[in-house]
Image 1 (tube, rainbow, N blue to C red):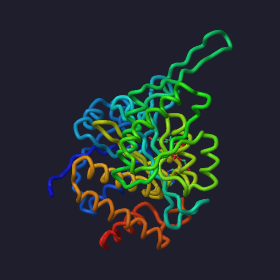
Image 2: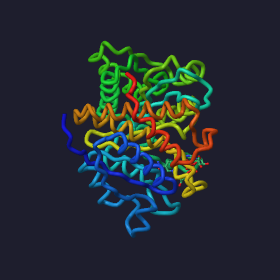
Image 3: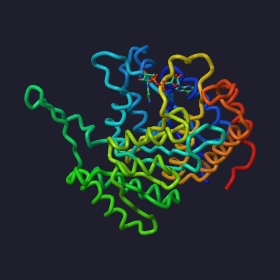
Image 4: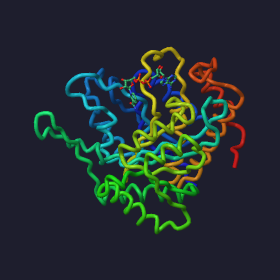
Length: 347
Ligand code: NAI
């Protein structure tokens, strides 16, 4: 076991970003996670320092350290500002979007027993941005699928499934209509699955899959989706367990990974100490698990497990922020999680 610190970039972000990322850093420190933060800026926080919305030094720091925890960023409305998230995804080739969705104790939701990991291909499909006006009143948008991108996202998904002990990967598709593009996605997924016979694999036409998802989400384990389907279905899945406020996320590439909550900067409550830090704490926990796997540092997995047990316990005891129907502020909830870290992690 190494006791060396791992450097990671911290982007506090805008609005509630500094409050919730600050809370996550306090929890990691209390859990003795050996992370040394390098603070970098993006979004309005960067503009205010006379930097571009995504400064070169921020991108370089993520390249160098390989990992970042990011708060939500404001993309100023107006010409010339490309979303920080889109830029990061492109610059760092973060091709796998990962969103684990599960029920949390005392968080109101339509379903119980939900524990799904949604994997979305992040780089092509209809998001390739190839749109044309072929004639007045006639426009087209090109859906791009490449064997390289389809194979690497499938390989990523099955590798994740194998490492995390997941049982089944389900692909949602529309290959009955989009025979070439979705057909290629399916062929690549099937080919990768051959290397993982211990993991079950199935395919569903996306309309039928969505119906099944809202009838019985507990029937699903992992979903593997191309870009547009992944975008839509991952929010649908978040809605199954109580909404975007309690769901973490990650964008992962070959060399770098950026972890962040799904919610935005919440300008209506920014600076008031009311924001729920849970989704960022969960994202930071994902970051620890990712580092444990990629750097072979088992103590990080134990820290992640302690943190997860601590926030589950806090929630189970009815300790919640206002957005979840509770009364606690950001700092009080954070302290409640920290106070429960001392107890041994389950499992
Ligand atoms: P939002 O997620 O910031 O807020 C929607 C509602 O949810 C608000 O009522 C807000 O108070 C509440 N909320 C969000 N997070 C919360 C938390 N942690 N605790 C308690 N309540 C919370 O979405 P909105 O209003 O559409 O976007 C606001 C800004 O955030 C925009 O500038 C948008 O571009 C940016 N944004 C940035 C993202 C990112 O950087 N990853 C993602 C989504 C939005």
